[in-house]
Length: 400
Image 1 (cartoon, helix red, strand yellow):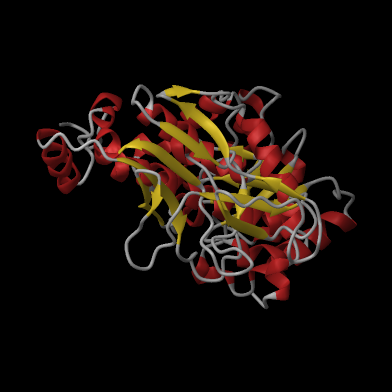
Image 2 (cartoon, helix red, strand yellow):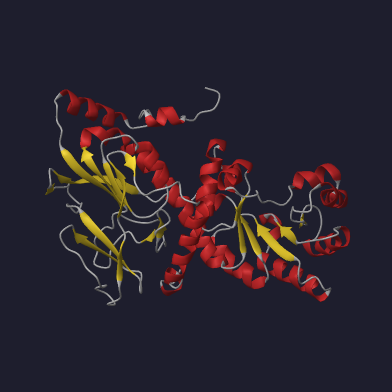
């Protein structure tokens, strides 16, 4: 192998599963065990300080399971959920119904697809919640395996990023890739020549964002850039940590100097080691956009587990799990989740009395994707952003 990754065929064949699932399948099939089960996917706990997660990766899971004699029920991709209901019951995000031997070996890849996808989408959503109307760009593909670039960018965009940097990721999303300029351009041409050449060579549709921290003071370079570019949309500060001091103060100083000279329309894009906790002070100082890298692409996974909860129509699970097929409801007013046993249905939230919506939808029937398209990623992103309003106060109330 020249590059160490599994291709689509190998993933579909189950070659990326843990060996004990393949051995389990062999035993069950040789002994002709055709036990019909329901296996659900839940999260026991979120990463530190997370008050919600974004469910993502469903489309790939359905492609993985397509053709198997099973049914799949799931939350809509892009649903913001809490891992535990208001009364302490784990919230299922998806479940598979079928003979266990038919899908046993797909547990590992199915989990991998939603765990990492949801982790990236959730981190992007947490950052966008802080940035609000400010632009957030996903810059993190350079920190991860290049084969994952479209996967990272799709989930970063779904979670709320306004743009992505990779050519392939943008192609998958039917977007124009977004970026500024690298320090390498300044180092090979000199700062002013690089700026001038950028303005002369690139199409007018490309944003004019000048990188201003390669050699000199950010303030002075920003002012110099306004003289060189025919149209300057923004300056980018990627000040290294060793020179940064108080980054917000640098941003505030640059903002002041641009404003008093009549360049209030020139934005300030900041990058370098940012996460959701960095955004607010920089935004208050005058930053209008954020290039966020590793904290999105290497986001903590959402650690789903798959567990059998029903066997031959009867509730049954291992210790520590809640048995039985379940219904999942979310309150349209307060956002709280309620989980009930399959025979119990509710119309109003037990917490606030608001109207509830049923969240679990049948998305595959006997191996065929049902009422499900590859989704317009733009529609999924809009869905995520609309839900963020429901959870916009949680972080502050919990003292993060």
